Length: 550
Image (cartoon, rainbow, N blue to C red):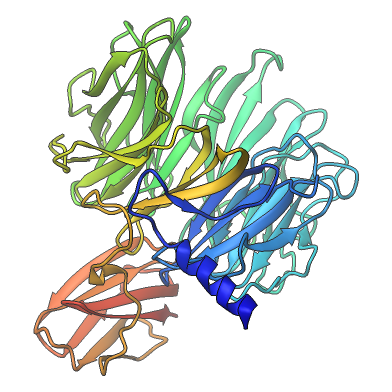
């Protein structure tokens, strides 16, 4: 009983903190807790995962939290893997699947070679693919930085670099029961081209986007381009020709590539590179769901001036305006002075805030760097680090470039400490949150902080993020599964106006509809077969559920 009481106190004390000088702490272990990852679910929960070396090995841990930041599992989370890990960590990835299970992928040296392994963990903390996960490769090649995404049909797609004589990109699909569906995997390999740095994003149905780079020329100065292919359920190419996001350029985009989805199955890309001599600039490109690029070949620069450098672009898609907002670090040519700028573009690539963008923070000896961004209807939030004081700050602009918050900039963390490897969630259940590694107490531990659209920190108190209330509210759907149309029937809602929102399995809002009747017919003709989620709300009363289109 005492253990249960202590555990309950630990969980309760970890909910979202409204004090930027405290934040929410998820680990209290010795040694380093590093490289946190975030994945959000459609039911109001989220996962936070990280590496911990409190035993001397970099083990993988996972914690599940509710929308208020409360841990759902024991203090410091649950152990996912304690297999032998290289002391030099490479990047890794986490996502969720259609059943809100966590999908994790990382490379370790349990076989003597750095190979990728995938894990599926249920909301109850069960290791669905066993304690050792699924071995995605047994190659003798060096295989770092694996990626994962869940498909709408419930499977998991993985991709990674395999470095042999020429670098290759390998990819594999795994079913919910842990079966590898593509045999020994599918390879992008060539004797003349190096394939590197893959990324994944879910597409419609059981399909996925594979983003990768192609390199030619000498390894010390390669020409590099960025490409996308859409894979079907069997790993075959859907498009006859891959989409060329960036034609081959000297030392082209690699790790700097950042992406976000639009609201119609396409992708917004941003990156920075040398464009003229030693000058750095940020670029933007958009691809629709058919693989067509909508901006000029090679992308569009956020600023045409060569008087300063631009780095670390972070894109956000504004679904209300069909526009793109990109936050970026503005720097002098010596990279000694830095500021924060933003540019807005339409889907054709026109710069809408002049040739240089909008200045948010002028250049100074301070370091404003590594922005993260997310769109919400007609506005976009940016979370960034303010170097001199080690603060984490946020700002939000509307589509006209006005600050949404009277304070303009909100402090999310004001503790003087090292804060690195920050990850940011997408918008979900009325908020965003960021997690990072932090040495404020000596040992590096994982801290997090949420922020709401009004700029406030702490628990979300509106009805947006609530689970089904304990009242006699009910929603029925018929037929479910359905083919073309589904009827929602509402009972006992106090309000006369009901909102019906439909989300895909990643939590992306697809449509919002309003009715003042007790029945609503949703025409799903434009949706691909698969699982979707709905939220029916009227005032403070909210009802969540899932629907399946056949």
